Length: 258
Image 1 (cartoon, rainbow, N blue to C red):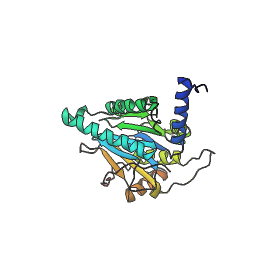
Image 2 (image 1 turned 135 degrees about the vertical axis):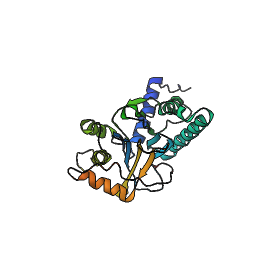
Image 3 (image 1 turned 30 degrees about the vertical axis):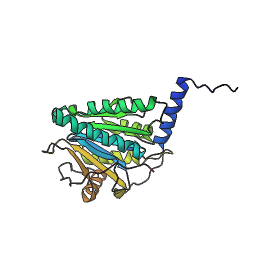
Image 4 (image 1 turned 60 degrees about the vertical axis):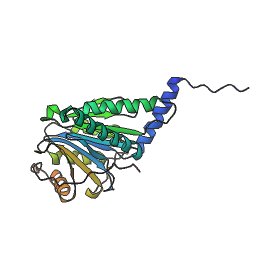
């Protein structure tokens, strides 16, 4: 009789973590940065139908890297949680912290279950406050842990290198154009140190803008508005373009990784 193959719990968890990290690393990176009037989401995404970034609730945005069908399920679950909590209690009771805790429980349960594979996803949940001090950014890796981020965060395939680049250059009070320029520069750097150009039509950009008078602070930046911001950020001594109107866009699902 053959002896059953034994794997220690520690080794099994390490193997599951490595599996999830490799899946996430195959996807394109994205960055989330604070700027003077809110939080900006920037990622490379050639699709205009499937999105990496979405609105969850009034002041809360969602970003994800990894396997599309997995983080799309999480996004939909987050929207349902927020709608139910806001309807049952009060809209102000829906917070990024509460949503991050729900996602952490879900990801942690899936990661520790031997009955199914771990999710190949990494999430960012962000909430814009009335001032920069009230902004909240939470990063949730595949294992369900929660990391409270400040200033900037990167997730996806080249996140470690991008995070180092952002940490050295991001500063408080940046204009939207300056933050967008920095985000694109960080995403344009390859692992070998070379740089490539990412055209505007391959970028997905959204903001949580605290200056908007509506309850809903999430807006996408597309088309001519995006081109003007990129040109302004690239020009030396460019004027602050945060007050340019942001066009309305219908919301959609998140972008799957290639």
